[in-house]
Image 1: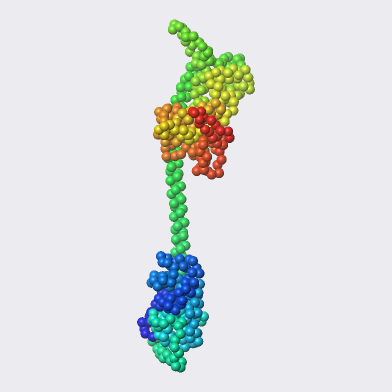
Image 2 (image 1 turned 90 degrees about the vertical axis):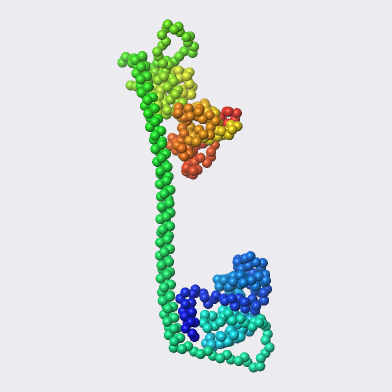
Length: 506
């Protein structure tokens, strides 16, 4: 055995795969195709549809395709990886090459090691490789890795299973090969040491791979957490931006309310000067109703007009209310919930102490607005209107959303005695409406609220409805899905026909 062959064997031991002994050479594939009937070979290959699909991909399934080098290469790979296919093909080979398999099986493993080159020279390397691979003796199968054997040596031109004319006497015994030398023994010992070191290195590689996989898994976990943290940070930044804009709007609204409050205080001081407080002996539930008569003829220019403003004046305990009717109607229409509830609570208290005075105030208020009279004297149910959804229910000829839809909805909800009627709409609605100037006027008056740009009104609608217990007027059945799939709100569906707004019953 030469030094080159020993070094090749050592290299295979160190860096080769564990199943190298079962990797068939091309000569074995050639011998299999030449020594086995094509039909029998195709029957074995067709037992697995997946194997057939991989083997004949791009070719017509048949014996002719087996002559293609690419198909032969695929067949070698399938024999190497598929144990069941390898066993079936080796069983078929033993049936067609029974003579060669019988001769190899009849030789002991020790003798077979020395006679193997002779078998290869006589039958071909591929035929001998197939016979050894199918030999039930494990020690015989190990001879496939023996160096110095030319497995690529072609076999005889005749088929392996064909009959040969009988020769006179028994075949000549091949000459035995010379035994290993001392140099070969030293190299074999060094090969065993290298094999042991290779096994230790393989275990270290496996351990390091496990550590690497754990580290990679930990890195992926931290990367996922970082992505989630970035998403949460972005969401919080958006919410902070939205809250800042909302705060700015609230500050502007507060400033307007403070100005309105100063104006009302001036008006109250003027009214108190015109209507002084009754003496202490007067009853605490004194009621004054100042309303314009149905038809008052215009007085001559020389007669000074009355300076009293039409309104409501009543006493509730230590507090005295003097409210112009216009302010009452304005507060109700602008959904000033806190102020309206304060007045309603005082009026209900007046109704319990002085029913006649309460009735007088109720009738005076009803002459101005029956809706306002109902809101101030009876319990009401709040409602939140999806303004964008209502405006887009019907569009004009140019495809613009109709503001009249929203006004019709507001009037119908007032007829049904809802209060407050909060209308929430997207910030993009002024660019999609047919009457943007009128919409802007309603927004500035406070009858319609536009959410911050870049956000959806659905979040604000669902939050108000959930916190206050209000109904939601919308045809968007998936309104709460993006906010909370578990949230169920009382929804009022609607339809608009010929400009009339119809609420569907819950």
